[in-house]
Length: 494
Image (tube, rainbow, N blue to C red; front, side):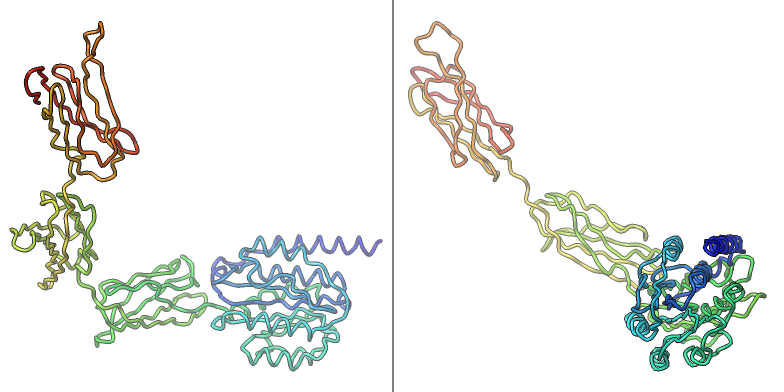
């Protein structure tokens, strides 16, 4: 019981000590890209106290790094009778998640079958992206690690860096053969009570392997390029010196000085379809940095207008749009349009930052030739033409309502219909009351199918109002009305 309480007290002291350590400079956070797989000895030869110390050491070692794809991916594989993948390389994308996972790890006990775990490690690391560095960090007591020489050699031949931390009673000869040179920075034998003294040196060794020292082109046009890099400086620790030049020019090129907190720069006023070389050197009085370089070719120049599109077409209007906008190179745009084949040509001019216009006052159902041209600052002129058609003029649903006499007090109602989508017609008229004490005429109505174009009406009241309305699925539309003048001894007319 006393030994158990003693271990709890020791663990509490360790946690307190790690939580009060000085923070690592922020420049480390975004410095690196690579895969780091922890191979943790979890067998019965490792005391529970030693296992806890190794976990706390790993947590503190990894705390400064940015995690996830594009940064540092961390996995944990435990060595026991059977290997146990505690978590894979793609599981944790932030420090809070990783630190919680390390606190939950429990020791496996059992035999030290390191060779079985190495086969799993080889499969995990070889399934990842080939272009990024890979590290296997072996945390062990070094006691009877098994036949690992061949497997470690295979990992190193495949480009994996092997680093190791062992307790003082480990098999140092096996460890020496296992790790990737140089031994002085990749192999550590340490008393676990003082393991924190190697944290900074081991972290620097890891950073040296996975430091993402590269200059990349992330956006490219015919006249510009955006370069990006991982920051290795801060505002107060130095500055960046950038040089870039064209392969076509014999002078020394351009030079820019950028603040230490920079991580990208846009190069402008470049020549189209031209090879360039750029180099970036971090300047600092704290340490030496490598010069980063990149070469690229700007895109071929695209003279505006390269495309013309049409929209908002109506019977008397069409919207014309063009692009790309190049206000630095174009003085003005001109739009010419005329009816095909021999209509008059209209001309309109626009400033270099306008990319569309609405052409109005056009003839319905007519084809037009539209030409957009740009006058460039160089004096060159580029034009592109398209054909555009206005829509047919919308015809009224009803037209030409006519009333004609066909007999005594009988009228023929006829109309023309032009609009599609009609469900029918609603016909109403004033009818004379027969044999009634009421003198006011009655209203009669009838629904007619959409194919109807006329109907005979009898017994109309004098000066009867006759109306025809179109019927749609949504209801009745506006109609047309006429007055029928009826006579008993002459033709009825309206």
